[in-house]
Length: 379
Image 1 (cartoon, helix red, strand yellow):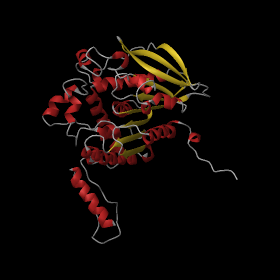
Image 2: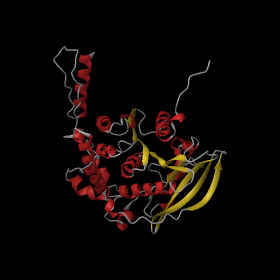
Image 3: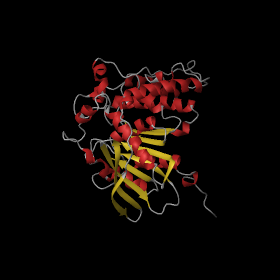
Image 4: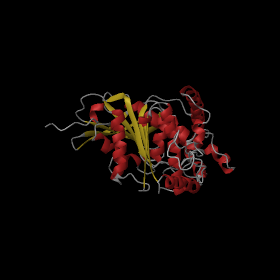
């Protein structure tokens, strides 16, 4: 059995195209002095780091690299929110859904649906629910149109959460003249900023909105989303330390081990990081990758969900190796219980089990212990 396992892992390293190897003691020995070690291209996360103090210092450097990737220094000054409430609907007698708008730049307003459970007994945990690439973004997140699997606001309000579901900045109420998800006008207005910097900054402002509400517990904030909203959840949690729990479903692929990495800096339609295109065309990757961005979230809670058959199978298998390295950081920060990942074979979906895991993750990390505690049956 052991030799079969070693053979499998060695073959897996060849398949993945990584430097995965397994180190064991002498052949035939059943005893090990230390666990088998898997080596991969993601090992640089903790190269040369042996203590929490060394990691804390390196983490500061990674945050600088992350903010530079976003081009955060070019974001505009944060305006007064000037929240407006446009309409209100009571849904099934369970929660109140309101269309709201608020300022994100001095000349620009974002729109979102806000859901607040009725009959709350006190301030409740709150979640920023991020939609994927969809023209009418927040309407799907509210369960009004399209796929009800992605109706996060409705699902979560029924579980007792206050939820804000904002439009992406090129969808819903703010579709550009060139069409949904076209960022040309944005880059004309902010040539030095990035789309990822823009939407991450706006999602952080959505937390500002939540924290103005008396129904919200301001220290119990989460974020979750699928696809574009999936990596949006990761980017926001790494950016804003007010996020205590995050879950990203079917996020995009990282920079390394990605044959389609240039899609992160395409020259048309939705351009994530326009400034890295020259380097990508020359084969140079950014100085930070997803495993390092995820690690900025530690020790706060983060759950990654992905499909092995969601895109290039070899790239998706690299994701598993990457996530194991992120766990090493959570171990170093003495918070392994705050990191998890789920890998499935249902492609680019938000299937029942994925939703159940995301919602349970929020329950575990944002609700009181009594909300998830089990009980024995009384005789």
